[in-house]
Length: 144
Image (cartoon, rainbow, N blue to C red):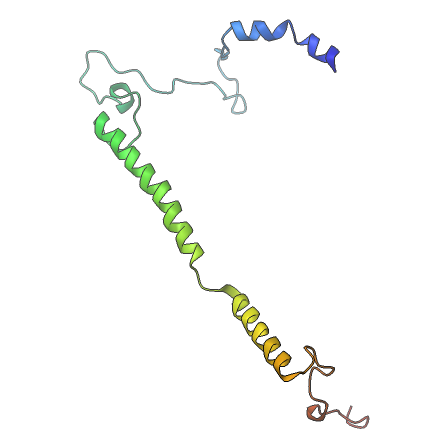
């Protein structure tokens, strides 16, 4: 294991000193399968023209809420606060106070009540017969 780490010993400091570079092919793509050329993320603003200016040029930290940088930042903060914090708190509270799904809590309370009643009466907790034998109607061999 130690011999494997020493192989990387000389290359690790080199990778820390040189910043990572991005290599992009400048050749023309030859077909639809090779159309992976990277273009500029934001088009440069036209100089001397009175065309529309991208919000990213005016405000590099543009979040998409408003063209004014201060209003944009406040709207982003409020949106994330109410969208995440309040939604998690109110959503968690709503889920916590949902009614008993499948009536599992009611079934447990009812079973505990039946057990206490049987213990007071001196009856066994589980009866030998699930149904009373006199109430079961059996078919004869000729009715099958």
